[in-house]
Image (cartoon, rainbow, N blue to C red; front, side):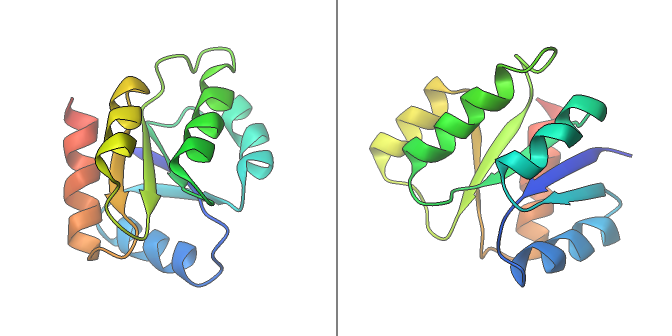
Amino acid sequence: MPRILLVDSDPDIAPAVKRYLVWFGLDVDLAVDCQDAMPKLKSVKYDLIVLSVFSTFREGCAHLKEIRALPGLKNQRVALTGPEEPEFKDYTLLKKSDAHFINKYGPPSGWYEKIDMILRI
């Protein structure tokens, strides 16, 4: 069963997304921010980390770099999630960061399909 870490400070969205992903057969842990995520990342092997874009894509990519700087996480699969599709320049930044995007308010089946696609790569 794939293990996912969802890093999202939204107290309404994060638990709901977790419930749906667990229903789809994924093992999901929650963290409210990167500081909360770091101890989990040091002790648990995740197949995918989903980072909510806290304010800008640039900030999300900075958090991504922090995570990938940890020992053993250089090639960690990561997806950023936000309320709307990124602009072209942000997609370029995602590509350079070898990260994916999931629309935060997309349907649960859309989340699952995207996660399934990422894990197959």
